Structures are given as C-alpha cells and as structure tokens.
Length: 132
Image (tube, rainbow, N blue to C red; front, top):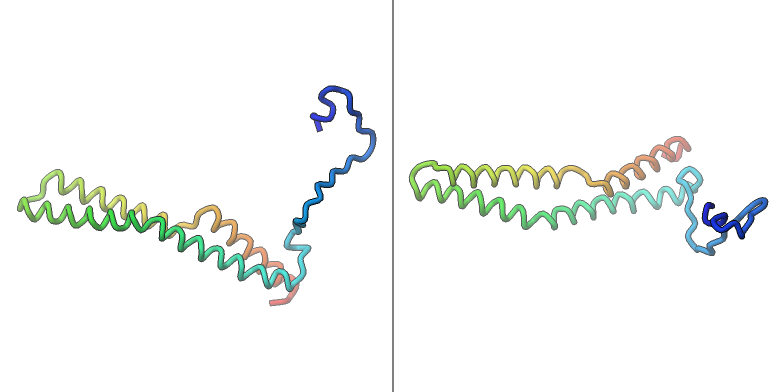
C-alpha cells in the first residue's frame, strides 16, 4: 500500500479491491469437498514417489563413483601388498561419499516433506469428517 501514497497524488478513501482476473482459485483443504480430497491424496502421494525416483536417478553417478573408488582402493592395497596412506584415504573417501549419498537418498527433501504434510492433512480432515 505504500506505493499508492508514494507521491501523495493517489488517495484511497474506503475499501480498495484488486481483481487480477486470474483463473486459479486457491482453497484450503478444510473448504474442499470429500471428492476433491479423495482425488488429491493419491496425486500428492504419487508426487512423493516421483521425487524419490528423481533423487535416485540424480545420485546414480555418485553411487558408481563410490563403487569404483572402493574397488580402486582395494586393488591398490592388494597390488602394493600392504596398507598405505593412499589406500586408507581412498577407502575413507569412498565410505564417506557412500554414507552421504545414502543419507541424501533416504531423507526426504523439502518438496517431499510438503507433499507428505498435505497427504497427512487430507487424511486428518477425512477422518474428522468420518469419511474414512
């Protein structure tokens, strides 16, 4: 509202309504019908699965790199016949990258958390309405 009074040449006395003529109508889940909620819940659950597949696909190069690094470390140690600093570092980096990539795969990201919260809210509303 400060933009309207910026030059003091526009005065709004009373109500001020803005109509943006948008076609999108945002409704809270509590105001939606049971049919809309029942249709939206599988859509949200599918979004979670799609995002999980995307995460795994994005991390496949990291998995491959970790496996190659682990085998290279084992071959290096076997070739030299003793454990040296390079084999230990390569094995340690491989273990660390493997651990981090598994954690990134298992933990839900922000999008998945939001979608899961929406699914939980829909389920809660449907239980309150005794639909389920």
